[in-house]
Structure formats: structure tokens, C-alpha cells
Image 1 (cartoon, rainbow, N blue to C red):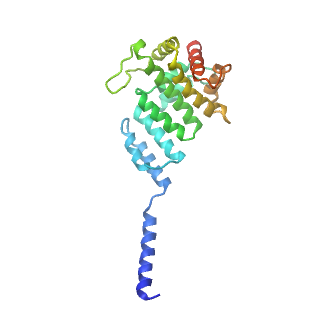
Image 2: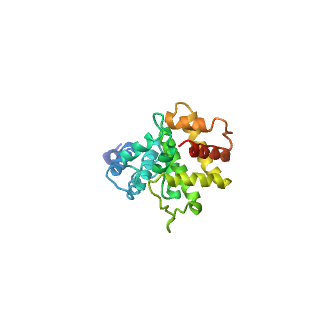
Image 3: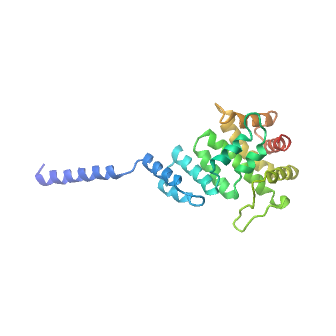
Amino acid sequence: MNLKTLTTTALALTASFLLLGCQETEQDLIGDAQHCLDHTTMGQAEGCLSKIEGLTSSQSYVIRCAASFIDEGLTDPAKLSDALNQVSDGNSNSIGLLQALAFKNATRAQTMFERCSASNQKGLLLISGVSKMATDILNLTTGSTGISVDADGNLNISDDPNEIAEAIEDLLLAGGSSLEVVGTTLQVVYNGSCKSGSQANKDICGELDTALASVDLEDPAAIGNAILDYWKNNN
């Protein structure tokens, strides 16, 4: 091999090492996205996800799941802790938990649920499922409860749990395909968070065990009817 060939080869190898050294690993990208989320605010979190575009790992979906909750404004630690306490230590106030976790927009709630489910984290699946069901319950009953919807499809909801309590009653009266919407989500959540291996949360899963004890778990409408009836009569 002559001097020219050796020089060309050396330069090519050097360039390759330099390029590899400059490439960020997946952990670097996820860390960058997490840092971005730590310093972002409601409505701005989606911009942080460009840092992990194309990644499909569980960790990347944890970041996407978190971004959905941040953009919805559901990140106040005190509020989230209080919401979870509604169904812990013998309490049975799922209505309060549902109202606290409801999204204002059903499309955003669907995206959130898909992201959290893809994280393969039982806890995120459970919380995102409760959040999606709460959103769907409110969204499906706007005609009867009087909850208004703006031009962008956002629900005008408050922190008052009476809103979702009324919506649950109306949904039970309406029956039909609306029950299947709630039941289909719960079917995924219950099987993934409570029935497979260790339970994500013993208090929430315990309520679901009771509500669904005599229900055909292959029937989404029956599942939806059972959980709504349980929430109506045990809060």
C-alpha cells in the first residue's frame, strides 16, 4: 500500500471516529427531552418531543406520555396526590379521581392514552386509562349535562366532581355504544394493569376487581355498564 492510500485510509478512519463521537445516544436524546420537559409549561411540552422523534423505546414513550399531561396542565404534585388519595386507604371516591384527571379534549386524551400504553409501564397505563375514561364520559354526555364545547373541541369543565357524577348517570341512561367506549378502554387497562402479574395500584385495582367480579370481560358494553354503575353507587 503506497503513502497516498495509507493517508486516505487514515483520514477516512479519523473522520468516522469523529462522526461517531459526535452522535448522541438514545439515552442522551431522552435526557435532553426530559430536561426540556422539566423546564417547560402547559401548552409547550409538545415541542420537547422533537428531540426523540423516531425513537420507539419504552423510555421514549414515557417522555411522550408525560408531555401529554404537562400540556393539559395535570402536573401539580399536590393535586395529583390528592386525586390518588381519593381511592386509597379505604376511601372510595373514584368520582373525585375521575374529575381531577379528565382532559378537556377527547382527541388529546386519545393520544395521551396511546403514548402511555406504549410505554409498557403498568402505572402509566392505569392512570392514563382512568384519565381517558373520565374524558370520554364527559365528552359523550355534553348534550345532556350542559357542559359546553368550544370551536376546538375543548370541554368547559371545572374541578367540581358533580359534573362527572351527573355525566355517569346520563351515560348509564343512554346505554348503547357509549358504554362500549368506556368498556373498551377499561378492558385494556384492567387486563394490563391489574390482571397481569403484580397490580399497578392495589386500591384502584381492588375497586375494579369488585366492580367487574361477575362481568364477562370479553364484552366491552357489559364492562362499561358495570364500572359506571359501580362508580355511581359507591361514591
